[in-house]
Length: 128
Image 1 (spheres, rainbow, N blue to C red):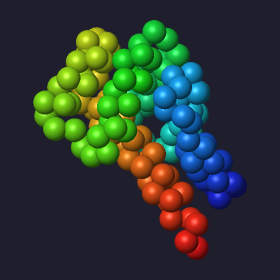
Image 2: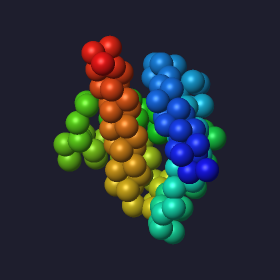
Image 3: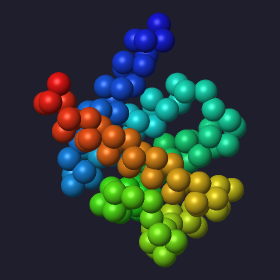
Image 4: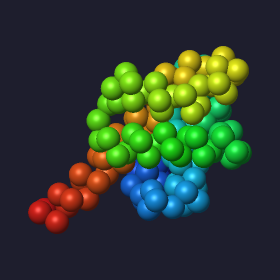
């Protein structure tokens, strides 16, 4: 049932970890990526999500984690200079897999935007 699946996805995304804890952030990010697989997309989406899923599982996670933390701490779209620094952590591997590193940055910025949306909703929930 689509509503049940949507509820499962929202619960996964809304159950934010302590982003200072790399392990719980990894588990949460893995869950977000798994939930994203249930949303139809293009073949490029599939390649990027497969790349991110693999990075979360292996030693590339440290760079992805740092990129996510940068995106979360700025609370906005990164400037070109900030983006260049953040992407440098993941660019080589993404390029080797035929993925534009800026596409990975866009996905991570989208994840950071979801986090901010959940945080904003949580802060407003006490007023309803």
